[in-house]
Each structure stands twice: as structure tokens, then as C-alpha cells.
Image (cartoon, rainbow, N blue to C red; front, side):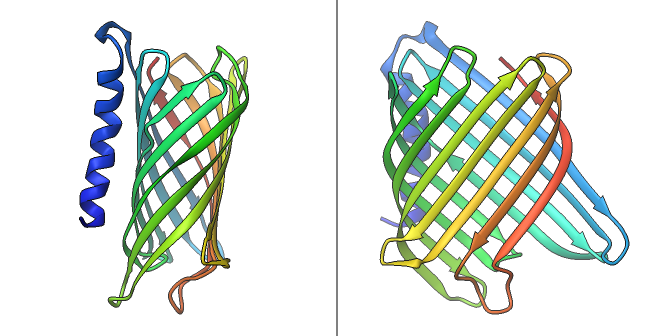
Length: 242
């Protein structure tokens, strides 16, 4: 069975498992969408546009199925430099502080020369702190099988450990959401990927907020001539439902 068929199966299970688990009157769907951009001029003229969307299906007291997607488009000196797509489904089960996650992901990036990247994995997690306001400090570790198809026809198939630190905090009109990922190749720990995504939101109403987002990615092994890291800082607006 190919990676793309397995990926479709994970997305399907992410929706069907929670639906089959509990009664229909306990279903909750939450949506959040963000538009952000950046412009700079001087030594390098740069424009950057990004949009991200997430939908989470919560079922009963123990099951959830978040699906997220993002698109990024950037130019430097009027030349296309960045165009990236990212999709993830992370169905999970939780009871108390324990978490059990699955993941299916797809990525495409011309900045790093990635035509297609597929990820499948599963693993446990633990919430050191969580409350009824949605604030949380949690760590998880998943084993991931990853297939990457690069520009030029080369490809890589590796197994990774994916350690994630997630911090969600809110105080009055301010909200912080931070995710840190460290993903080494299990066969060679000098081959690794690290990601930091932090969003600070100033909420004007229960549904609208002004956001600032910091994104950093580092990949130790890339195609020749491609950058190993990339940093973006954007400002935008977010719409969400409860």
C-alpha cells in the first residue's frame, strides 16, 4: 500500500473514530482561520502572504480529530521564492492527563525543493497542566514514517522520532499558542528537523483577534543550493468559532 493511500486512511479514521465513539448529541466542531502578511523594503524587497485553517471535531469526553492546513506565498525582489502547502490530521484519544495521538501529514515546498512529503505515525503524550479554559502544557513523542520526493527525482524514506512541546495559555484578551518540534532520523541523529511556531493573539471579540506569528524551520539535510533554515514573522487577523 502506498503512502498516499495510507495517508487517506488516517484522514478517514480521524473523522470516523470519534463519530463512532459517542452519542450524536455530544459532537462539537470548532473552526479557526487566519490571514497574515509581511512586507519589507530596502536591501531586499519582500512580500509574504500566508493563510492557515483548522477544524476540530470533538466527540464525547475522550476523542478529537483536528485537521489543519496552511498555504504560504512569498516573493523577494519580485521573484517567487516561497510557495508552501502543509496539511495535517492528528486524531487523538485522551483520558485525564494521558494522550494517544495519530498523525497523517502532507507537505510541499519549493523553497526547500520538496515536491511531495508524506508522514504517518502514532505515539503517546502527557499533559503536565490543563484546565477548563483550554490552557495546556503538554509533551508528546510519536514514531513517524516519512517519504520525501525532491525536485530532480531523488527521494528519501526515513523513520523519525517526533517530540513536541505544546503550550497554550490565555489571560483576559491575550492568548499564546506555541508548538516546538524536534524530529531526528532514528538511523542518524545528526539528520534532524526542528520547527518553532508561536502565535500571540489580541482578541477584540470572542471570534476576531489580531495575531502576530513567528515561524522558524531548520532541516539539516536538504538539496544542494537550498537553505537549511527559514524564519518568518507575520501579522494578521483570525476568525474562530466556539
